Length: 77
Image 1: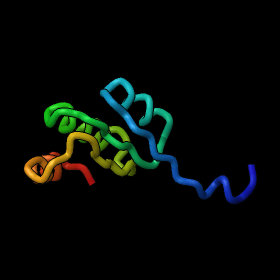
Image 2: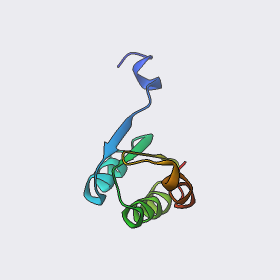
Image 3: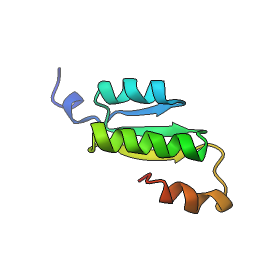
Image 4: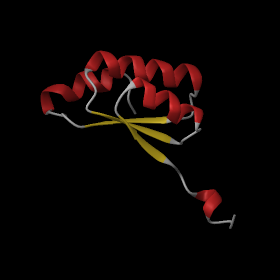
C-alpha cells in the first residue's frame, strides 16, 4: 500500500441498522445515515457511540428545515 492510501478517510452511506453494523465492523471513518426516520437515526447514533465512538455521523435525505433541529438533537455530527 502506498503512503497516500493510508491517509484516505472512508465514508459509507447506510440505509438501515444492518448496514450500519457492517460499516462499524469495517472501521469506517464516517457513516452517512440516508433517509432514516428519526427513531432509527437515534438508534444508529446510539450504536455508533457505544461501539465506535470515533466514527463521525452525518445525515442526509429527506432533510428539511423543519427536521434539522430534531436530527441534530438525535446526535448526528
